Structure formats: C-alpha cells, structure tokens
Length: 389
Image (cartoon, rainbow, N blue to C red):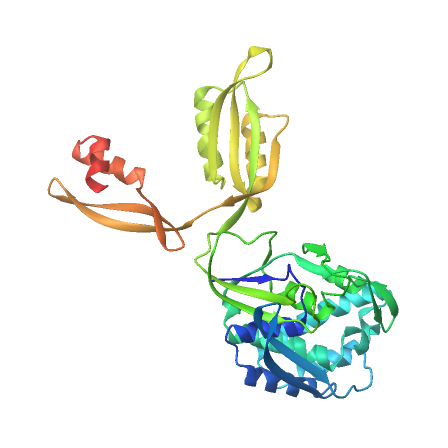
C-alpha cells in the first residue's frame, strides 16, 4: 500500500492531517486523549471532532481550542518536556524531528541560533497537540511501514498578521520548511500552509511528486480546514493498492568509432557487471560519414560514477552525455519457478511475472533456462518455448 498526501487544493495544517487520518479510521477518542494530555505541559487545550461538509465534500474537522498559554521557554527546555511525555517512543522521536524542522526554519528566518529560539516561535500548546496527534494517528494506522508520497502544496497568498507583524504568504518559515517540496500559490488570498502542517508533511513524506502516480485508490480521507472558501477547504489523503513503482534512472550515452566487435562485446559485459540496469549498442553514421556505434546505458543514480569510470577506461571516450533523473514507470514484478516434464525429464524454468493493480500483464520464461533445456534435449529453442509457454 502507498499513502498519498494531497494538499493541492487547500494547503496543509496539523488539524487537517489529523482530520484526514480520523476519516481513514484512526481512533478519534484516543487521539483526543493523547493530544490534550501531551499539550497540558505547555497549556491546556480542548480537542473536538465533527463531520462537516466543505462545498459538498464530507470531511472530518479537528477543532483544537487553546484554553491556556503558559510562559515562553527556550527550545532546549521545550524539547526536554517533549522527551518526558508519557507516549510511545516512535511517536515521541518523530514529533521531536518535526519540532526541530520548525525551530531550524525559525532560527534561520530570525537570524538566531537554535538555542535562542523560544517556544512562542516554534508553536504554542495547540501546535504541540497538532504535531503529536498527527504523528500518533500516522503510526496507529500503520503508515510508518508504507511509502508516503506528498503532492504539491497550495500555500495561499496575500499577507497575514503574526507576532512579528504583518508578513507575506507563504510565511518565511513555511518557505524554509518546504524548500525541497513543490509549492503553488493561491488559489485564495489567505494563508493555507502553516509551519506546523508543512513540517509534519516534510517529515512523514518519503517522496515528493508533482502528480499522483499510476495507482488504484483504496480509501480516501478528507480533513477539513477551519475557514470557508469558494472551493472545498479540505486536505485529501489516499490509501492506494499495488501502486506501480516509480523509478529514477540515468541515461548515459557516448559515440564509439574505434573499437572492434570483440571489444564492444567485452564492454557490454563489463558494464552489466558494473551494475548497469541495461546496455544497448546501436549502429550509427557519424560525421564525415564514418560508421560507428551509439552506446546507451541505463543506470541507477548510485551506480553513475562506476559506470562513467568503466566507459572512460574501456573506450577512451573524451566525452559522455548524461540525462539524469529520467523517470521510468515499472510494474510490480516477481519471479516464479515451475517444473516441466520434457522428454521424460523434469526441468525447472523461472518465469518473470509482471502485474499492474493485481492484473497480470506479462509472464515470460527466462532465456537462460530455455537455452539450457534446448541444449540438454537437442530440441529447438522455439519448441522449448512453446512447450513451457
């Protein structure tokens, strides 16, 4: 299963995440208890859940009311209080990482060291409730064992009043927190992405994507925002089944005009041994009508340097072209072994089987197994392929 957090419509906030998690089945009574208990050290809060309709979309609204705000404390003391909370260790550790994201962003914006950042800059008791409630719900749904993909965040526009005066939207801290994410302005003159929501998103997401990848939606949860707009003010979270895996690869190319056929064959084998995902060599006509070959290698990013070193070493090339981070869609694949009786003898054949959303799209026997059987039996390769087909 893959989890998709979709803040493209109305941004993201801690209470919207919690609402969406509850909409997907998280225990609202337990979350309310955890949020109120955890926030108590920093100021009393009251948490209520209710179903609301946002422009026709039924969603869950998590209302966090701050009843008491205690005096500001420095970040070190704040983290110490979080560490002493009576909650699960994984929830605590992830929550601390989120608060550190917020604090680092605030320290950069205000030109302070992390030790100088105070609690009112990191968030108040309602922020504590939002972070710990979101993280608890995330773990309670088992999402920590799933891949989480984040889509672009609508950040809103205009200006907003803060403790530091009127500032532009998105707030400087939000920009710092989301510096590796995809953001889009609008669609309203209002703040849509909060520092708390942005930091939770960045901590929980394993991957940031521009679009929803090829997938089959299983469940959808909607978390409502507080404000009402001319569009549904909701955050959407999608649980998907058997998503087709996305892969990022490098395509590495160079022209060859001085190697013999044997040397090219050797190069082919050496590149595969060096970790290339695929190698192809195509005859081409080069400048001045010289015959040559186009070497094309598909490689994972972590194999790039060894592949380049191998090509330079074996070809003496003066230049190699790289198209990095080409996205390739790949199916869910597995290898299945089957045994066949051919001429009174059992032979094991491995099949490469591919699926998209539980639908079988390909089942091919491995060539090396077919070749081995053909040589052993004396039958033609095409006949062996038909027998096991």
